[in-house]
Amino acid sequence: MTSFLFRLDPRKTKAAQFVAKVRRELQQALAEEEKHGLTKSRIAEKLGIHRSAITRRLQGTENLTLHSLSDLAWAMNRDIVFRLERPMPKGNEPAWTAVVDGSRTDTQPVIRSVLLMGEG
Amino acid sequence: MATITTLTEGGRLVAINVELPAGILPHRLLYGTARFRQFLEVDLHAIRRYWDPELEPAQQVLALLEAYIGGYPLLFQRQYWPLKPHEDGIWELKTPDVRIFGWFRQKDLFIAVNGMDATEVKAGHYYGPFVREAVWHRQSLDLDGGIFVEGDDPDDVVSVPA
Image (cartoon, rainbow over all chains, first blue to last red; front, side, top):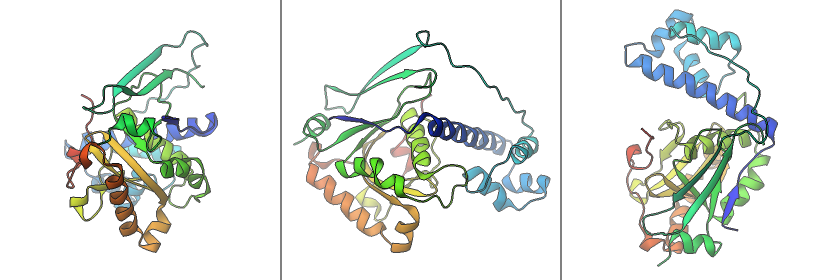
């Protein structure tokens, strides 16, 4: 076998993707705000907590509650956009096929991924 | 001299994929040894969650591989890190509870050799043995004459789509 699809059950996958997305959004917002002078220390000061707690929340080594997420958004002057959408009906999903060369010296494609919207 | 294609066809490497969210296309490539595949299929699921209160180690790795393959920005030091000696070009992909060892054959093409519980790696001082294992494995493959990305510059090993 030349390829291996690493996957977990849909429930665990959904959680992993959601948590990772929230963390990425927080880190990206912080990176953007840091360019405008906002620091982790300043965020911690606004929230009345230690700077290390901000780091742990952003790193995922401290539990992030809805309230603490809201606090971080407030301290960074960000609005939170949250939606729950139904997956698209089967058969109507936009299908993507990507073929990527593995190296400059290889002529055969080495990854073929088909991405389908919704749970699978 | 071997190529990625001959090594995958011969079973010495396997292309590792994950199901990316809708609308996200693969941007970086991941290959693994048979040992790494076994790690993903078996060993990983026995690692106990310690540092991440939200995600199990297998979920952490799924999220990391999704970020890597999907081309999301990766956090240097927290999600990927060059191991010493830097001239060996061995890197670790990191989650709070898991370490994955390997090397970049070229920018955005990582070859994973092995993985382990992060706590065990640190407690047992296993970084040296994993570096030596990865170097040995790279040499044994003779992939395109053994070329790899040297050094410790994060911009040399991963790019972010525009």
